[in-house]
Length: 137
Image (cartoon, rainbow, N blue to C red; front, side, top):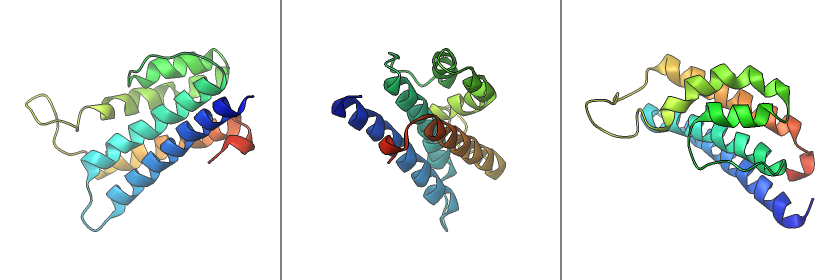
């Protein structure tokens, strides 16, 4: 693998770790921001999936639908099918708590946040396990 590609995959993974870390900090602070934290869970999973796709030279659209990314990843490794439910759960968090308005909720409940954090961690850990250690952050 050339150095530029290695650095790009590494960068996607680092951003995924940063999103996951941000979610944990925001959710567990004395004054938690669960709406922002849950968004970062979705982002962590999205960036982890995209890192895997970049590593395998698979193009993807700049969309936040994790189910589409899981389908692309599954074409390379069928074990990604196990993340279809996680993708369905996490995808709405890219937008549902991000903006005010009548169609959007104001704040996730703590159980939703806990589940989102667990799913994002599972996705990132799985993706890291599928990629060589020398490109991990």
